[in-house]
View 1: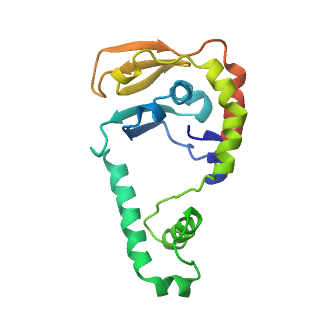
View 2: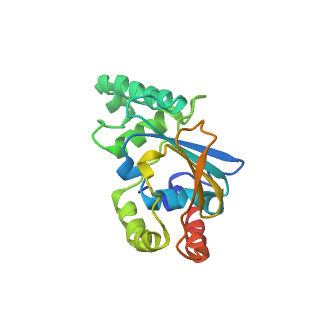
View 3: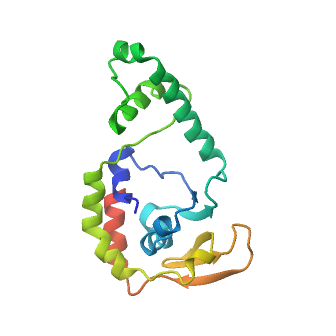
Length: 195
């Protein structure tokens, strides 16, 4: 599960200020991204993050649009930079050996460029802390979406309720309430650690 609380330390300020809608695109991995906890957070996205969101799941390897291009550009630039090993030593960045060195390289490459690609590093310790803090509460609060593998597009219709569509262009959808009980305290705690 992603860690919404880590956004506060990864991206300075409120990363969603001025944003009205976020469209998440993911390929494959239904057991990971279509978990009841992730979909529950989506159903409360506006309350937690201050903006609406949808989530579309595509077939693995079928491209997701602009985000594929950004990721591809980043990987290509990093690969080219890695081939110039002596350049690393001049810039004191070091070899690309771990996630921190990729972050350091990104800050050096894009901090002064007109092209900005923001890369954040979320450490395993932080993910484990979030999991330990919220996993049980989320599991208790969230109902699973029935027949989740049948649906490929999810949109919040009201707090705690998702419209589940067969495709992202489907007009027909099923309404799935995800809250098992009043979740105001949990939503408030998540919001406090995000922004």
